[in-house]
Image 1 (cartoon, chains in turn cyan, red):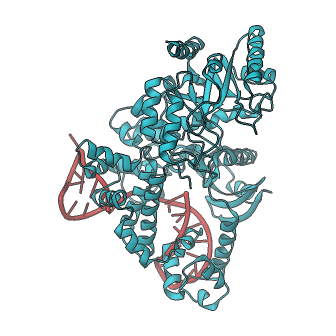
Image 2 (cartoon, protein in one colour):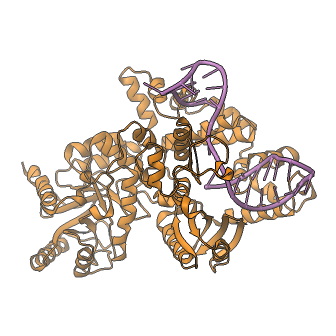
Image 3 (cartoon, rainbow, N blue to C red):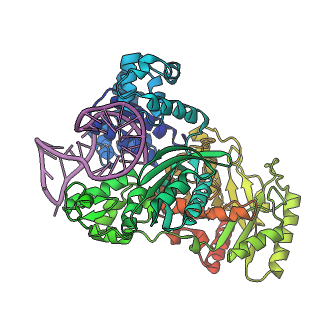
Length: 604
DNA sequence: GCCGTTTTCGGCCCGACTGTTTTCAGTCG
């Protein structure tokens, strides 16, 4: 779990625990779902809920009303949120935790075990944690439980082992190559007419639970066989007519992969079904129901009967996603937006889908390293990498002096480096090579070079690298100092988080975004799949609520890193980013003017 | 518990697969 929004994270965690506890206690499933949804909505908020409440009070509006205005949060949850912000606890959560042993939540996490089974094991066998369960795997009393046969117990045993050695969700940059290899493998099977990955991977989520692959084909058995018996498959979890699940090992990662065999004529409907987040799909089906229709993975049907596909009814739309969206009365919504973050509502109300940024819009790389600091490429090789991608501008931004481990440049070396860059720029056609630096932001907000030296640079990317566990107030002061500094163009990887690694800084984003907008400093989406910093929800808030400029850069240390731009673009699209707000899309003249303009204004 | 250009009460998405079952419950996505 990432912890950048510590308060929101903690609050979301409480709602998740309440949902799990209610589930284990056999409470109404809709109540369980409502609580889980509140948790998700809280996680999606860029702004701190505590700040939202504080601001509402300052402005003399009712916090309750402000919270209730958020989709998915009703009166009950709003009251609990306020209770948490004011007291640090939620009474109902405390009561539930007294009723349900803490270890049961871990048992519930084991794939294949759901609330019903866990509750039964708890009530009948006093199993309250994974260790209890492991101790009873061979016991007769476990086997005596209803619906608990040998296979089920074997599956639990394997699932525990898998859970113990798996690191949870897999970063996008690890999962995507695996999925691409799977797709290629399946495309090579005879009779396969289409193969594509769907799910959270197609939505570009920063981490992936499992890989979903859709295949249309003329010989389903050949596809099932090819999928389940491939050399990388370490276990077959399910093998049905249309759905197979395996565990797959690829280099160091182990993941679950699901194959769905779908009819060619319903590929679009299936792709939609298996791409949308659960909540997005619910919204779409509600739209269908509202129109007296039924939507499932076989298509959109002009009936509300159950399983119309089995009754021989032909769908009105199914072939392509565009067909299905159109028949629902909606514009096609890009996969990255299908998260139930207001996209269906916006589309239904005729606001239209934003013109999202694409990889082809990127014309400049403004954050890249050479072997002068810790990059693998020489200056000339770096330039060739940028030229190969058709960029009109490359900023060479090696590390500053304090990044000792990264061989940061002291002022003397930097001045020589600037000269080399300028000289190369003189004799290079077709691309502008700018002299820049990725300058450390010290914990107190000072920059790593003095202002005179900064003034000699064309591009200054200011980034935090150390002291990434500062408290919020210190982190906010530090980053504000950087974005308001007249010689800083871009705030690099603003929080310093590492996905699945460290939470990073947790500044007051409202203050940071307001200052960045006011001073015309761009905020970076660092495209490294280990970072993706800023993250999608933050970028959306920065641009939509504050009008900030965004830079999408790869922070390349080698030629291959340039390809990470895919991940930055996916993140930007998840933030509903349009090209105009991204400085890397601007024409050369506009970009160069902007870079120079910041310097001009700083000399006034 | 949430929500409402059909509803402030009564709904709340839909289907596949497994394992244990004589017809289906539980889990998953």
